[in-house]
Image (cartoon, rainbow, N blue to C red; front, top):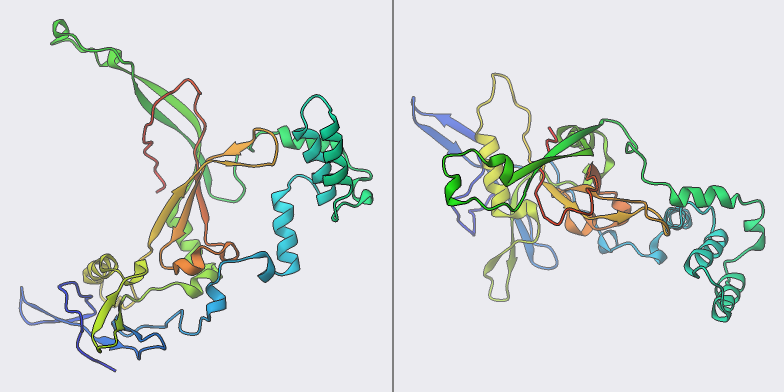
Length: 330
């Protein structure tokens, strides 16, 4: 069903055009409006959508994962990842008590051993038989691996120019004292992946793309007076998305190129993380999320929406400054 845009704005998406003259081009935009759902929300697509990914999604599909909704195998895998390198909860409880009780033993520590380890419902004495505790302790103390797991990772070094704090005097005018004003330090061990390769891998072979939005649209809610109000709740129905889609559609095409064009919305996040329950092993990864995926699905751990694209190295603790590091992912 084709209807006029209830929210006219200058931003449109170019789908086809007619060349009326050398410098005159007539833009044709096909708009398709969906029927309103039970919440009186409808969509206005710019161009016929190939598919609507969330057309048949139920409320249960967008509920954040919880222990009750996970399968037993998924819960077990998540627990084993959390207590790594311990093979089971019994060894983890005993190791946790040993490393957190301090160098000296006390009555309260003994009571904690009995109540929270030996008498715990999930503690099984057979699970700790034959465990190589020395090997487990070595794994806890082991630092992060030199190279991240997976392919297409590359290591590089970054030069950081650090101010020395030496102020330039009036008598120094005309002299090149840049070497005194700052020093260059080289930080090694920066691991990165090619972002275009990550996009290609996800878009071509990841099942999560089944929930990706590639067709731009505007979303409207009809109030009790029958007036339509614009709803913006995702990246793919924002004005910025529509403008970006218009730009890529307006790019010149080679003869015979009829392939669809779409946006890959990149969202980055970074935070330091510890790798084990005990010890000092840690990493500072850079995460990549795709804004093509709904925020309700993207925030679910079971969606596997997070992709690692970099690992920041740790510099000396003597540095007391904040400096943005230019990273080339391409």
